[in-house]
Image 1 (cartoon, helix red, strand yellow):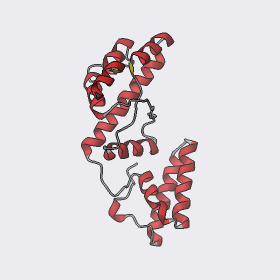
Image 2 (cartoon, one colour):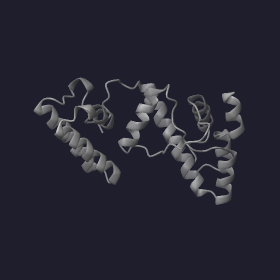
Image 3 (cartoon, one colour):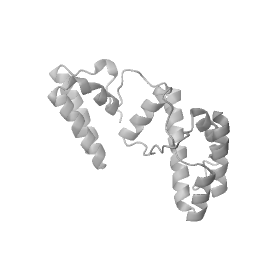
Image 4 (tube, one colour):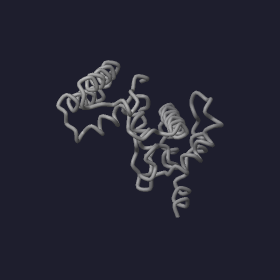
Length: 186
């Protein structure tokens, strides 16, 4: 996306600032084929054109130019985490249905989001999804995984990431067993 302006240059009040933001959103909209993304670009364009100040932060979040920078180590960690879950999901889709179902019953195979105490991780995840760089949905479970769980998974995943598809055994080894997750919280 390279053309995102630095936060100190964003200007919703001047005509030239609005033109820059409109150009950026038009460019983002034209590069996408996702209907929801295109509609959201149009929504943000309307916010800028109409001067709806109370929604400016939403536009900033959408274009990935929030006022608080995300540290590089957080963005790298979130990208690696999304790649891991995409690889797991793709591999599960290639397994026989019974094996995939067994792996999902035995352990957490889906991304459960980030804890509210991790705003930088959450912010970067939202940025990746909104800019169509990653499409890992958040799957809500009654006891979600924490960043500690994700880091444990990423350490195990490191051994297998070069495989085109992960086997059921690899997935079960990488993912947090359902009973361990409960013990981890207690």
